[in-house]
Image 1 (cartoon, rainbow, N blue to C red):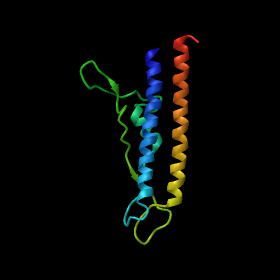
Image 2 (image 1 turned 135 degrees about the vertical axis):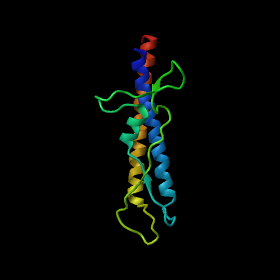
Image 3 (image 1 turned 90 degrees about the vertical axis):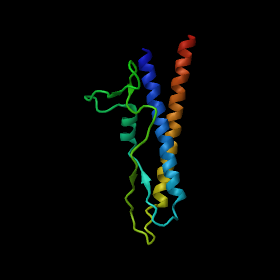
Image 4 (image 1 turned 90 degrees about the horizontal axis):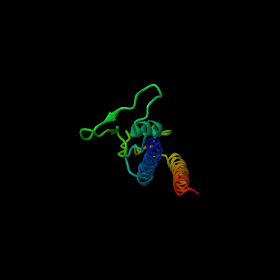
Length: 136
């Protein structure tokens, strides 16, 4: 029972960390919109979340990494470091900068809304658990 609760909270925690990291990457793209030869970066959120939580397809077993004898944690949990990829430019520029402000702003806004939704969902889960523990 405790394992199931921990897995749910760990999953949502990893999602929040990855949303935060994606916000940082997108903010870096926006900050370098006028930097010559800057290449816009992003990452596949779904793949990064699967890697961070150790959840793959339903048929694949969860890969475990041990830190010490007797300890086992899902591989990558708690330290999301997604594989950054260069964004394909929609239109070429003279200074070889691939940042498209409209695309970056839309991605940043979408990520912010999803971060807020994940945070509210996690808060709701914690409130529900608190009520259940207190017997209310």
